[in-house]
Structures are given as C-alpha cells and as structure tokens.
Length: 283
Image 1: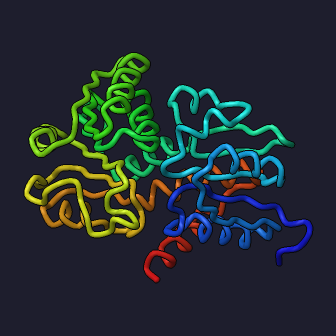
Image 2: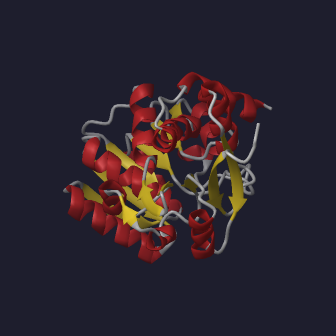
C-alpha cells in the first residue's frame, strides 16, 4: 500500500505510455515486500524533470528515448562505464546526489549470450546511433570480442561521432554509413548479427520496419531492442526468413534487474520480473 513512507522510482522519456517498466518493477517490489512504487512520467523538459527527481527525493529513475544522452549534463556524477559509453539509462538519487549509470549494454549482451548468439569474431551491423545504440555498440565492441562493427544511422553528426568514438576507445574495426536501401542491403548481406536500435516498430510506429523483408536471410542472428510489441514487424519478417531472433524483452529484463538491485540493495526476483513482462505484453 502506498503511504507516507513509500519510496518512489520512475521512468522519464517521450513517449513512455508504452513502457512496461512499471509492470516489471512493481511486481518485483511486491514479491520482495518492499514499500516502493514505480511510475511513468512523459517528459520533454529534461533539466526540469531531473530537478524534480532531486527535489521530490525520488530514489531512482529509468531514462528512455530520446533523453539518454541529453540527461547526462543534468547529473552530478557519472559511472565510468556510462561516461565512456556517452549515454545514461539509470539515475540513482543518493541523498540528493544524482548519479548516472548505463545498464542497457550489459542487458543486451546478456540477452545475446543467453540466446547462444556467436559474438566472438562476428561481423555486427547496428541500425541506429542514438542512446540505446551507443550502449550496445560500446559493450559489444569492448566486451563481446566481435570482429567488426558497422553502424547505419539517419542523423549524420550523431552517427559519425559514435563511429569514431567506438573505434578509438575500443580498437574495434568500426565503420559508419548513412542508412538507405543500398547500405541496408549490403550491410545485412555481410553481417553475422544485426541489432536494431531505432524507435521504428515501437509505439507510435507499430507495424513498421526499417528493413525490407526480402533483405533477411536464413541463419542470420537478429536482435531488436524494441520490446513493445514483443514481436515487432522486423522480428516477424526476420523469423519468417529463417533468422535466429532475440527479443528486446530480454534486454529490458536484464537491464531492469540491474536497476532494481542498484535502487533497493536487494537481489532481484528475475523470474517474477520476466513473468510480469510477458503477461503485460500478452495482455
């Protein structure tokens, strides 16, 4: 029951109506008997929202599209990994000191390794260059042992900044190209793993895909970090072509587990969190 002693956590982004993070986190709080509540806040004014987190003593916040990069300038401290990646998806309020972390990359890599995706020496194609893409790109390049990384983006400055930083900081062979039909077709034909990191396919763009269905091929590994809907059009078409698919729900779960433990100091009830996500998405 929510009362005067309830600890509040939240998610900020635009949009957030689609988010299943409240379902996942609140199920975990209930399972552990914690007097916590997690709510979603649609936010456009990031500095004011972060000031509100501090003023209202909100314990922690998830940060989602499109604020994972811009929020960094509003925080007091950055975890070295988040600073290195250049994006934040988690805020911890430590007695008024706001600390930024990034659990996206670790969540994505665990999802891929749990599914059996062969990362070592692989050719990875990443679609998108925003905050989520930054986390996954840096983590796979630095810790996944991949052979090469090609990034296709639609925002030129953002794309080439990410490409340069990943190559320089990790030493991985990294290339960047603007996304169009030709670069998509050639990139997918050469890749062992494709990771989709754009908002296309997510509310309010359900039913859309950046990849023409005929570009997929049997045996390719494909991950979509979009988790609502659980099976995006991109994954549906990839699966129909015989690709091995990895759902964004697993990345959401894994990064959420890390957030829960950072905010509460308790071990996360992973099975309860997964079940809550699956029930929410199926309902």
